[in-house]
Image (cartoon, rainbow, N blue to C red):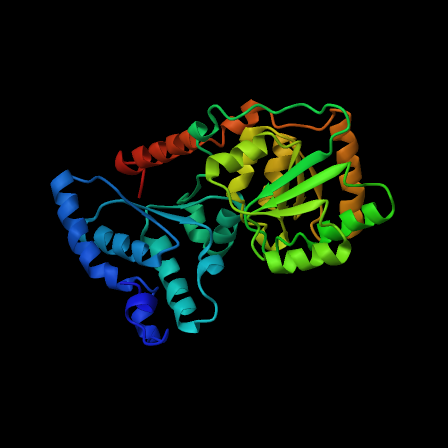
Length: 347
């Protein structure tokens, strides 16, 4: 049961019912069922994944009871996932974080920054080689038979697309809007030059009001959600793709980055210069990078990017560079780790 949905009265429930999270009532029954499955299928290893800490608690208990090796997948750090307004939940989850890392044969993360932060906090576990990274990625099947890109012809506006949530904090498009407005007001850019689509961005009221204030309604469209394949098709036909990932997300990589790399379209990235997202883009040599908060830098970088698009000189991600981020490659990494865990290479 979800404590908030099933155990609350007018949305209120005792915090003790949600330790380490709202799904803790799953724990005893899951252990019972897990023991039956382990015996029936002669299980050789346990895998659990965050952000439901109770899943790690179930795996911890099963590993203790059976002695089986266990891989704990943390994905993003616990500190980024737990609700900070509940002090008891924070302390409980952080306490379980240490227990999980201490017990698990291996702990897995999706970005170098996330793994690095844990290595700094748990140097003894890192020194034992028990922290591993398996990146997120894309499914190749999603990209089969997408419509091909139609090259620039005549004087049609360049079409720049972003698909997905844009948070007012950390992934805000407002400095980008200000840079666009400056270029429009100075006569450098007009609606005949560029068209921007922000697809399913969220916070439409905030962003719409700012677009109206800046007079950008004809240049920037806040578009509704599309089915996933349709959204990919729109991105595959875009002249360029936009990416917003501020400094506070330096240790995270948005899932859309891997889709962007596979699509192979030019990318204008407003990102933290030292973050994992910027690092991948530099390694792939596939984007123009600017600070997400500096209006003047965005303005200058955007004009250079547009000139390169018009001249057909904008860099695109080579297919070979994107392939290592396919989920097939991620599955191979997981398979190797499971082999290492079960064939005597683990703890």
